[in-house]
Image 1 (spheres, one colour):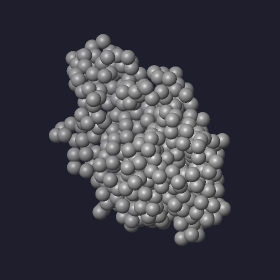
Image 2 (image 1 turned 120 degrees about the vertical axis):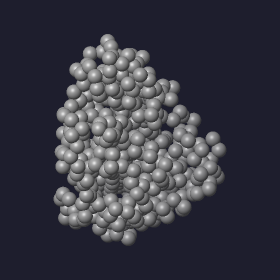
Image 3 (image 1 turned 90 degrees about the vertical axis):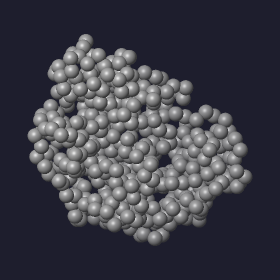
Length: 458
């Protein structure tokens, strides 16, 4: 692999005697990882039913290596949202941010959703996840992954940091910034990043990062935690960005990151910075079975603010609907009717922590339950993914090796006359091995396919 001369010289300066070991790591195959959605399945059960060879990632509680020759994205369990495919070092930031159920959390640069899906999983349906990405196209991919994971208490936003600050000053308990960066830590995984590095080097990204982290700092409540991460080795983007925050905002302090034997300490001497920067973490590919990463955990000093903060609350458009209520009678999921929001034909279930959204660009405010069409209610794909099989009163459960599973994912009508169901007609929650995939409508033993067209098996 051809590495830019300027990059090579910098890495020799940073690594010194370890440089040769680092360069040799490029000869190793990249590592492939998946992270289990523990809101849907326990680790023990996943290990029991997993159809391909996996090995535990030692520093990630719900992370596993898998053989790169296998294709877990082409398995029904992927479509059931049981796991997310993610490079092992990239799993680290969300694993080291102590999110608790009931927290109000911001993922500042969230697309395509690797960190956001884990943060949402940690919330266990309580509190609120605001997942933002400045790119509209990337935010659409983010929304799909969040819905695939069955995360209901979410607000998917498409805004700039300064616009977010207008709405969310000192609002969040926890913030994660996986900042846009020069990507040096991913050169082995994706050599195409090298050409991008040559166009826009570390200094270009450092300016963006400093703007983002300063805006995010103002959105964190006193007593809150903020985790900053990159997938680069550049000191100006890593220790340099953290030092910039500490120099410009004295309400922040660095905390120790939950340790692992393969982690390396931050390098304050590379920027002439504070010794506190040694509390940050560097992940090196020649020391761990992963690509490169940087992590810093920050605490905002001050008396913690409990519960809802001031500001105009989201206005819920309440509307009684007999057909909606008739459908919800089949659902045992706990849905507080006070937070059902009907906007035209679309029905949402929103978090109590939602704020007024006027003037903000967003893709989703809460869980899309479905749509009102004439005199009927049609449940959404997102609603199916947020349910457990036992939370709907009539289920079509197919085993993962049943050929009809793939046919369903392709959008085909199914003959399920041999499958035992509670109701012989009407809406059915279609599951694989007991895990929801989507909806179907049953009539005379034939299941009309209601799987989302944009999600279908290709």
